[in-house]
Length: 288
Ligand SMILES: Cc1cc2nc3c(=O)[nH]c(=O)nc-3n(C[C@H](O)[C@H](O)[C@H](O)COP(=O)(O)OP(=O)(O)OC[C@H]3O[C@@H](n4cnc5c(N)ncnc54)[C@H](O)[C@@H]3O)c2cc1C
Image 1: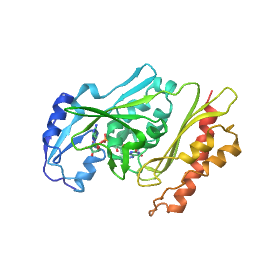
Image 2: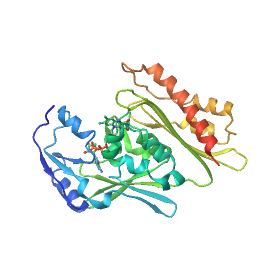
Image 3: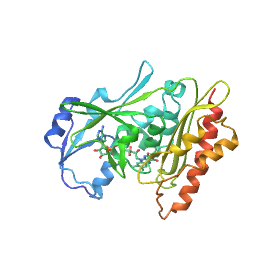
Image 4: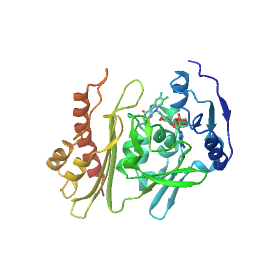
């Protein structure tokens, strides 16, 4: 339970952090809240020779609005997102997801950027980020690039971030109109991680019909995914009970579900359908 020896550096600017990482792309790792990285180092699953702590960089922790977009700094903690009154008004899916992560200590230290960059298959944020069709802004010394949520999660613990890149910001285009959002999960009782977690972001027209739907599912497979079949079935429907149940039946179409001691693959698939239906029902009833 003691990590291998490493050098610790705490740059005060993002430029300094980028340059340190660029000089040591294979040996160094970014430290955010440390709630995933430190346990991995203690188990010697990760043995970086250098930790670059982003915690002293002031301008990486923020929630801002820019026209119709929401900008979130990578070092924004789960608690900051959970407790934002403004987010409850304009994008309630974010505080609802944040409030279901781990416990108070985890939410106080853990960051949205750390969670996304870690890409744990049972993490909560990836489902919400996919449902919202967010964009991730990655930076390195010679520039930045924007990665769509659908392309960001590559596999278990693997993202599209390249060696030397730092996740700086998450951008979300705020949905307009009669928007309904919800996040529902079955939590693993010991860790709080999602056995199944379903994020829903939908819009209804004045008649009540669904004009757009974003459904992200975590916990089921080796990475969070977009439930395309559910989205297609929802759009154009009246979002009544029958239409929602029929759409939710597509929650695991084409997905190779994980099984473990806690939940078999069949049970996960079943939970995914049940929680997709419940989360869509909740989101549909909230669309004012
Ligand atoms: C007891 C416990 C319970 C938990 N329960 C849940 C839960 O219910 N749901 C859930 O979703 N999560 C849960 N977590 C995980 C928690 O949310 C972590 O905060 C999160 O997984 C990682 O965020 P972090 O800020 O701690 O990142 P760190 O642990 O510091 O970093 C994680 C990884 O991301 C990299 N990284 C971090 N920031 C960046 C960046 N800006 N750019 C590039 N790479 C970066 C690091 O190098 C490292 O590889 C739990 C953790 C614990 C310890």
